[in-house]
Amino acid sequence: MQNETKPLCGIDEAGRGPLAGALVMAGVVLKKPIDGLMDSKKLTEKRREALYTIVLENAEYHIVSFSAKEVDDLGISKCLQKGLQSIQNALDGCKYLFDGNSTFGVDNVSTMVKADDKVPEVSAASILAKVTRDREMIKMAEIYPEYGFEKHKGYGTKAHIEALMKYDRCEIHRRSFRVKGLDEPTLF
Image (cartoon, rainbow, N blue to C red; front, side, top):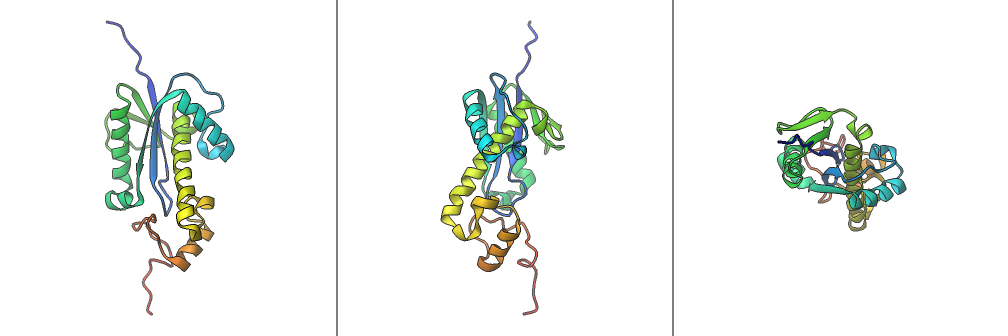
């Protein structure tokens, strides 16, 4: 019996901490090396977009998304757990490496802090997750222009908080994420 090496599936997420929008996870098995891969947050939007296309053409991948409502209903940890399981089911027979320090109770997953900047497969997953999420937030900006999602992608920037104070939450805001000044009881 030959000792076959299992391919590495890199896994990362985008959208764990924003006030609005989906949590997106990606798993990637590279078919060949790709130059220029690194943590998606360290790349320009233009470079991420270019690498996104290259990764899609040169990898097996699975992308899973959890809406703001699912994040509220299930919680971030359960969504991450379900996402890891979905990626394992879709990309079977791999070694799985998830960026971070928790497997969220999922067996056969290894973790590494900053793997998105150290391991090409995880860098590729980081790019797929971030570009997928960013594109969705740009679409949401067309539906909800008052929030400026195209700029901050749902994260808690000053402009986003100000829009929340003025317009309250829309359908894609996470209700379980508290916003100082918006979620505090007042005397009046």
